[in-house]
Length: 186
Image 1 (cartoon, rainbow, N blue to C red):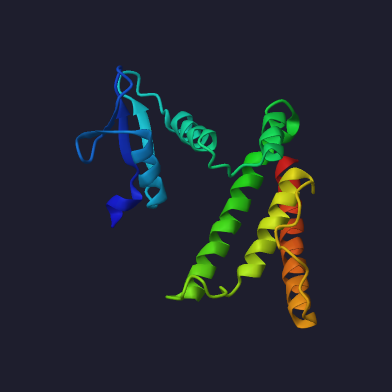
Image 2 (cartoon, rainbow, N blue to C red):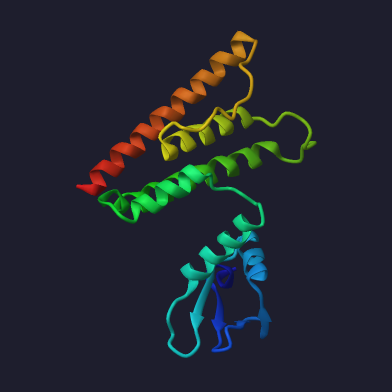
């Protein structure tokens, strides 16, 4: 169990081939993406210089997926990320993104716990709240320019008030995060 917490060490040779030190074989970027999807942390280092190349390769994996049409990052978000590299807001963005993804990951974990073994076609408990959370996140990241992901407005008043309560809770969490980020940037 302790070994799983230790990052999988991948060494890059001068030939740019990537070598998995645990299994003593060569791996591809897709293999590394699979390790990460399986929950494994990886560290990629240059064999000769010892430089940590993990960030560079993770960005390459994302770029490869985006170029194949697996678009996760909307153009507005990518544009905003480019802008943060050229202004002072860039110092707060990494912490905001980390907290946002932590919140998203926690929400997904709770949803999966609540689901247990359920027919995937059945309505998932908490799905509306997760959609509202994602919508609030995207609005915060893109300055409110994204369209609503929640679909048509609910017809049932009880369903609408539950959604409103969930959205209000998410807005409060977002406001708290923004307050924390403001304190961090001072």
